[in-house]
Image 1 (spheres, rainbow, N blue to C red):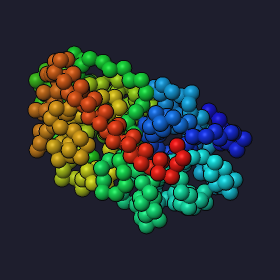
Image 2: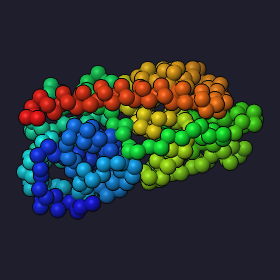
Image 3: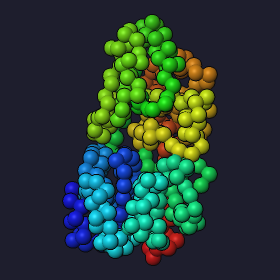
Image 4: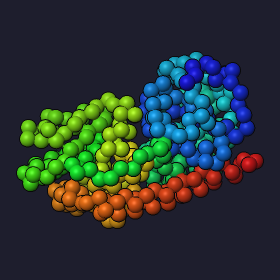
Amino acid sequence: MNKFNSIFNSTIKNKTILIFEPNRYHFECLPGYAKYFIDLGYKIDILTRSFGINAFFLFNEIDKIRFFVYENLKSLYKYAKKLKLFIKKYDFIVVQTTDEKNKNLFIHLNLLNLNNTIFIFHNKHYIDNNYSEFFNRNHAWTLGNISKGILVNPHYFGNIPIKDKKKKTIFFLTSTKNRNYKYLVKSLIKLKKDNLKFEIIVVGNKNYFNIENIPKTLIRNFHFKFGTTYDEMYKCLVNADYIIIPFDPKNKNDISYKTVRVSGSIQLSYGFLKPVIIDKNFAEFYSFNCKNSLIYENYDFYTIMKKAIKLNNKEYKYFQNNLNDTVKEIYKISINNVKKSIYKNNKY
C-alpha cells in the first residue's frame, strides 16, 4: 500500500491500467475488474481509500497490483492538475463508480475528454449525454444486462474454498434499505416450528434489518454482523450455503434491480458459488433458473427455504455445479466485452 502522493514518483510500464474508485463503497467490485485485466496480461494500479484494500483478502495475484491510497476527495482536488497529466500515461483509466455527485471531479481530472477512460455505471439513472461518446466506443460498462452499456460483471474475489452443505443450513442475507422482510420472517417462524435447523447471517453497513424485526423465538437463529470488514464477510460467505435476496415484485425500489441496477448480492452468489433464494420475477435478469437457484413465487419463502434446508449434499452440488456453469458463461461474455473496449483503440 502506497500513499497517494507516491503515485507521481512511480514508473508506469506498458500495459498498465489505473482503476479509480472515487467513493467510499463498491470496493467488493475491485478484485473482479482487476482480474479481467490481469487475465489479459495487464498490470494494475488502483487508486482507492485504504479500507478498500481489504476486499483483496482472497486475491491470488496481488503481486500484479499496486495500491495508491487517498484519505478524501479534497486531496484529489488539491493535486488535480498534476494528476490529470499523470494519468495520461496509463493505457486505460477505469472509473469504477460513475455517479452525478463526482462529475465535477471527473471534469477536473479531464476524464470526460480522454479517449482511454472507461466509465462503469452501477445505476442507469446516472447516465446522461456527457457520456454518449463512451457508449459509442464501448467504454461504458454495466454490471448487468441493462439497455445501455456493455456487461462486465465483477464477480471474482480470489481463491474461494468450496465446501459441502452444512447439516445446519446457513443462509446469508444483506441488510438493505427499503426492503420488505415480513414474508421472510413469517416463513422462518413456520420453519422454526417444524424443528428444522438453520441459521441466518445478516451483514450490512447499516442495520435496516435487525433484531427488532424478528420475534424472540428466532433470536438464536440469527447472527447480525453489521459493519464487518471484507475478510470477515468473505469468511461468512464461505461457510454459508445459500444467499437470500428477498426482492419484492410489488416494491418500486426493488423493481429497479431488474431494470436499471444490480444488487451486490448477485456478485457474491457468482463469486462464492452460493445458490440464491430469489423471486421468479427477478431470476431471469440475473441468469438464475430452476437448475442453479431456488426460485419462489407469491412470497412463498416457506416452501422454498424448507426445500433448501432439506436438500442433501448431492442435491445441493447439483445446483452449485450448474451455477458454476452459469458463472463461467458470464465471465466469458464479460471478458469478451473488455476486449471490445480495449483492443479497438489499442496497439496490442
